[in-house]
Image 1 (cartoon, rainbow, N blue to C red):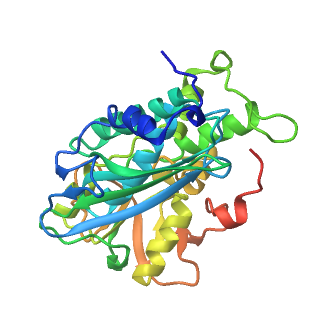
Image 2 (image 1 turned 90 degrees about the vertical axis):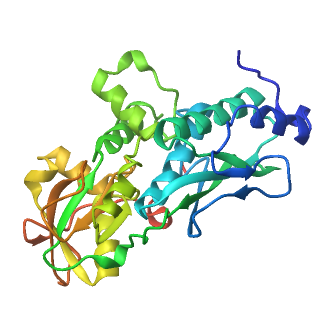
Length: 328
């Protein structure tokens, strides 16, 4: 049963106890929640990343449950670990919350964090974090991963002639965001609650992918072992993220439109990113299992991204400094 007690009526010790009992345990944790810092076993090379989700630019509480928020906070960070070819081992979570946040929402968030780890990265778990009061709800997650003796796969290794490949879905979460903004916003652009009875099954699935992404995390290490020359998590849009990989590698990415879909699907695939697919390049046509070819690496051109040999000029994806307009 959801506990609607505001966290402002509880002590930090009580809130932490409610969270700790729900987050599970990371298999690599030698010391986890309860001391000043966690101790994580590793092969010697640790991958680290961090991501912050803030009420407004990153999620809307009218659309997002505590469970959704916990799941997404885990998934977006774990995807960055997998994109380096590493195995996720631990999450460190900092929460800044208004005092009227219900403790049941916080408990659901802890459940989402735990179950995302169980489903997407078994053995990974929350090992510590921080709590503080804030006027705006914010979740900051630091994820750790183990290279298991492998070399990290970076953005800078793509070479001319490499196959460009993807693992995971493209454009589904973007469709979900379209549905949310067109169907569940008021006239001023503010989010309103989702009425699932108004939605078709495809729309429901798209919204679920937006709120609870399911990146193919296990394929990151698989791609590394298969010889991926470059790799990254597609979080801000395929076209935008591909341009980052291309610029890091000093090349241009040429996508095949037939491999991305047609019409609206093609546009969503190129601008959408919150499915958190893994974009990788391989020096041969023998791709890692779970990856499919969507283009080629060509010599550097003025445009870092081409589609069927022509410069891509459409929407590129999400930039928080240019796209966020303050509406919630």
